[in-house]
Length: 180
Length: 263
Image 1 (cartoon, rainbow over the protein chains, first blue to last red):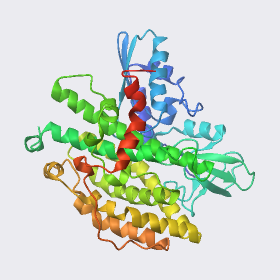
Image 2: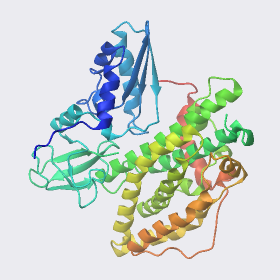
Image 3: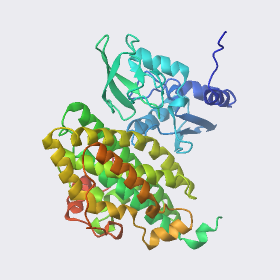
């Protein structure tokens, strides 16, 4: 039987929304703005970019926080403003939207691959229930060598969104981006 | 306009959001006191991250309280900082359990277990609040709380069912704080008005589920649920233990020494 890869409905909706935007150049501009804590990921790929609007030299950007205490959010707001200045946008208003709450399901496929290449296991690289990645019956794949023989070192890694693992095959420690 | 606005005033919702913010900021600050002092480096980082989650929750509640305050007063200069840094001890209305001193690692672990499991059930109900912002904050915070509960449970099992020393310290900690847990399930007049309006959580209804889950974890950790009849409360009315004043002194010092400073 042939398996046809499909996009998740959430991702399809996000892409559709972006495609229908009247300001494609602004979305493209923000593809250059990365998460300061994980420079491999753009705001779009991590899934926190929700909407962009422009009126003359003013713009508004709606983002949704990843973790509520994430210190990167302030830096991200600043980076967006700077990126838009280069396009002649003098004033950018950042709107933080709490609902619906951000979920790792909004991370793009490209973002997941980039995360893995960067050395962080994306939330879906879990054999078993990827929503319960820290349970003993779930196995997280090592982003370095792909081995499923890994062990949990700490439920929280370098940031709240990650957990720290070690690979029993190549012995490299690595972070897992936890499902939320 | 919903009928709820007729029963409760905007000030009621401001006070409620501030209370929830107080709980979050106080326990967040307590946890942050472990940074650089945890048993090992991974746990140090974990504690810092959990503290940050609570700080994030506090910011969401306080920002909402500030927004409502500005609407009510026709001002635009009240911010989350007014709530965090410019109120005195008697104006804080956090639960006393949250403000108790850091203690040893067993003490902080036992306290965290009681609080995290409480938050799990509390936020589950707050998601149904007729106040859209509070409901949205609850959805957000509940996701993080799921991971907090895992961590607290694991540590309780590890220490309770660990060495005789860690077991003894965990049991002592539970005995020391148990009397403060009852306050979590009290509802005063303010909260009752908000419960009737569908805004606040009726905490009295959370106790059975909380006790069942906490008991199961405590017993699995070979510990005993304290059989005691003492109860301390008053936090929601602004009556605090000697611990809160010291915490606020440290937390508010920089802001009060340099009013309006920005970086």
